[in-house]
Amino acid sequence: MAAQLFIVYPTCKTYFPHFDFCAGSAQIRAHGKKVMKALDDALKNADHLHENLAELSNLHAYNLRVDPVNFKLLARCIQVVLAIHLRGEFNAQAYAAWDKFLACVADVLAEKYR
Ligand code: HNI
Image 1 (cartoon, rainbow, N blue to C red):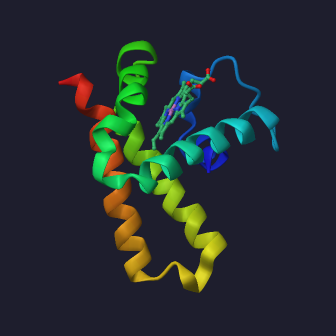
Image 2: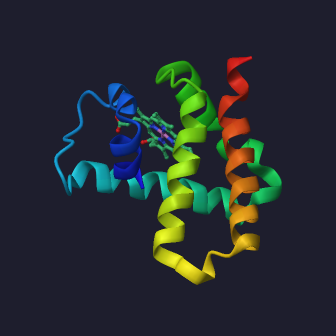
Image 3: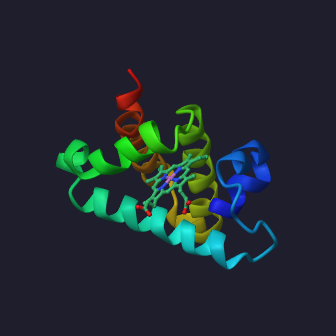
């Protein structure tokens, strides 16, 4: 899904000048794993998203300075990849649930910018 982000929205590559962007890049796969693990941890404790994502929120706002619009772009790519892999299982309810969850994550990751 990280690879999808860089293909569909190549400007996102600017945040990763040190990454190898060749097809099947081990670096991108490893990074995608990190992001999905963070989402999995956040989901397991969804009532405490702010506490859970506080460190990542600081990192993205103060250190990495990622424009928050990119969180929405990544969310879109995650949904596409889920739909490709889960096919019929990724039904309207699953889509709505993921959409809501990823919007909440994006809000929390962007809250330090205010
Ligand atoms: Ni993000 C690092 C989680 C969206 C740019 N990011 C991380 C790490 C996690 C993570 C976890 C690893 C932190 C560590 O090693 O301590 N990122 C997330 C999550 C989302 C997200 C959960 C949204 C769902 N990140 C984005 C977006 C961008 C982004 C949209 C830019 C387009 N992230 C980065 C960059 C790094 C990063 C840059 C540092 C990468 C590195 O290894 O140098």
